[in-house]
Image (tube, rainbow, N blue to C red; front, side, top):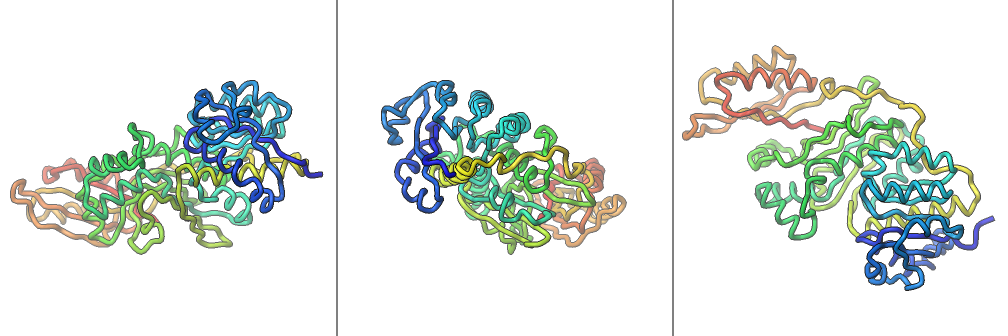
Length: 432
């Protein structure tokens, strides 16, 4: 029999938490009508009481100690929105130990310590939902878990960080350099004062680890995930890749090749006609390839108060349905053993963009082509820009045929050591 009401405690009233509190208080009838369940905000926990008051929480529902709240027998769902991997882990662990269902948006905690938390959820038969951990308001977790459940996935390519996408969009469309675009992102609130987690790719990596666990049934040791951020992208490469018909994006990539799963976070190139190439500003996007559905693309706001609150509240409703039906199961659990072995990045195969800065001498292009050929790397197209008189140098841009990453890297190591080389070769994988 369906419970009369499912009682919810929200822990953490920051940007997202305030959106969740407001939505539960203002849209209860809408949620009941569409979801078929009644949820009630029973407690709001934050050390800063004024945040809870500002979100509209009634005085009698505001508390400053999560321990007492999560142990209360009248609380059914604990919503953790504190963030980070410290106290947030204690909140979730305590809630699960008390048999409470948990909803969280905490991608870092799930990616780095999720196996422990999911084991506790399994032990206590308590749902642990996390739609808002990836893609903000995009319902990609539900899509993979439920809507596309019959598909075997071959690839997932995502633009999963709005800060990086905004910076790169400004560099591409307005010709700004990286530092200028970052400062503008910070001024507009799209980047933190300390943007390291975003621009160095760790935020994207957390999300990729979660998506890969879901889509490919393979839990990823986060420390093994190859991650490269966007700080090294130059205005020169922005201009040159654009000239060649490509767009640079910070990409999260999972691909199955030869029975192994390859994962990487890196600045990569998309052909300008690719659907993800047109995802600009702070938008997020995910492209999934399944054997039945072919390509499914999801685009939307990847962060922010209301988009993320939308995903959190969706999890609250779906979890309330599970609890109300008395089901002794979870919406998702990590696989007990990995479905795929992880492939070494050296064995990854794709096409590559290579930009060489070399002495403007006769025969240099031939030497570069010979070195690439010796390492089994073919050239599909090549462009040479006019010489720079100040440095007596030239810029050669090559697009390779499909090649093995290790072979490309070995060839570049050899080329960059030659006397004609004037700078380290710039490399981008071409995806999609």
